Image (cartoon, rainbow, N blue to C red; front, side, top):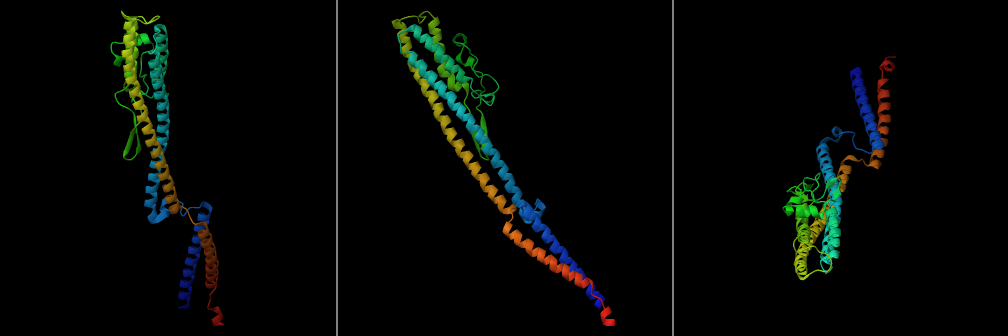
Length: 304
């Protein structure tokens, strides 16, 4: 009976020693890594929550990066629309003079500025190309090319759809305009002026006659309308910039929140881990001493 009881006690002490050693190992791991467990298996019932939090953080981070890239594109778009607006103003001012030679010189300058704006790129893609970002959206290189086109729409090669980007699970934002929608009215004015200059009542050379002045006055109204439409696009783009900036901030806040949530699950309380390590080491010492004592128990002293 004594042998059986002693053996059972030794086995119990051995198990206590092994558990204490395991506790020491786990506490040491936590102190060295700062993590409550080394893998999802070690997280127990919190593993599912942790997995979902990581997935949500990855998604929010991707949306944040997309919003930052989109913000950059919208800034470039704002600059391009600003150049188009400037070109329209230059054209309007050119039409206020009665010097025909000056008119056509300034029309040429304004055309080049507007054309360069139409060919603006961001990240290697034409911002006014729509979903065809790799295709030049405006094919007229000179005023003569513009005048030679059978229809104003023939000089635009953009797609029929604007580009768009998803910036949240349920939010998609258009990120661009089409060349024909921002430039049609302005370039139609360039085309008509160039055709008039080359027609029976042209050219604009020296002081304008009454017919030419009357035509120019009528064209100023069209240019002003084009200016208003371009500035409408400027305002629309500005509203998108504000929306995208807000979305970027929202996604960043979401990432920060999820970081804290994940940290609350994964990260260990270092002070608590240090205390548990000390307790576990004390338990090892006690368990080891108890096991050693029980291992040396014998009936021999009682049989002498």
